[in-house]
Length: 377
Image 1 (cartoon, rainbow, N blue to C red):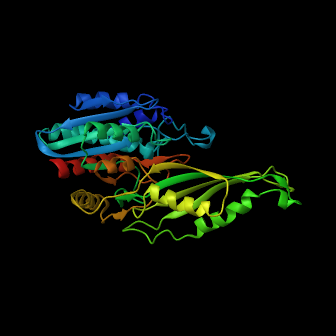
Image 2: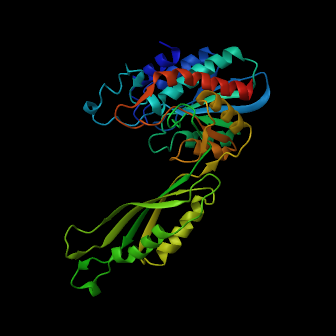
């Protein structure tokens, strides 16, 4: 078996359910230190973070490879064809939780870094690997905290390649060049509970909130930005009432989320939403959670090199997209870095029988190595 396949299997065997790293980063650090990288453990709370750096012999940019060692829960084990934490190869595919998201990419990063440090020890600038065990969870003590630390100590990052599974049909067919921001809210509207036959003695929070929710849902926030789609607001949960059909509820709770492009920032969106809600609701609270601001990497050296390398690997120019959800690159981009995402096919991520093809996995280190070589050698 190949080196990258062996390492991916070893990582899958670790039950690193977010935010537990389960020893993955220690295994990786031992290999990278042997390859000449300086490794620094950066724990915050229950989260493990690893920062591994190789410094060249001349001035130049800093290129960071960004990934995570945590995985989502597998769900019912009996639903899997094989144990999700016992990697299994069937019909040219490697099965296991994290095979695609993203232990395969992490293993490929490590193998590519070992080769690059050996073949180009005098490269320009720095090449680094940043790993966290808090990407699939609340993402509070992972790259978010590391980025705060980097800002305090003046750690410069010029380029960042995240190994998230971005390809759609074949390896290298998509280059992620940005991500939308994500902003979540919990709206609580308080009324006065009462009998439905005597509405004059009650105040219905559902009725108060309905015009506000209708206005929020119908609003056209913008027409998009560059390759970003228009900003979207979606109501995801509504809870009110006692279960009886003759009781006016005393309280309504609504959860909603905005996925937004660089036309906006979180503060501006919060103010817009609060103005709409405040025009209709008398007694309410609105609690916000800022998951991350949008980021966009304009055309330049990083995108050009990635485009050329992916074209060679996929046989056609990649789609350059800002779609999908979000990633930890949202914490690196505000440091001034240009960020892209390149990884394996994402068809089975978070699913039962998650897998990656062995062929794609074995080509992935060569892809990352070529990007490093073109950018830093």
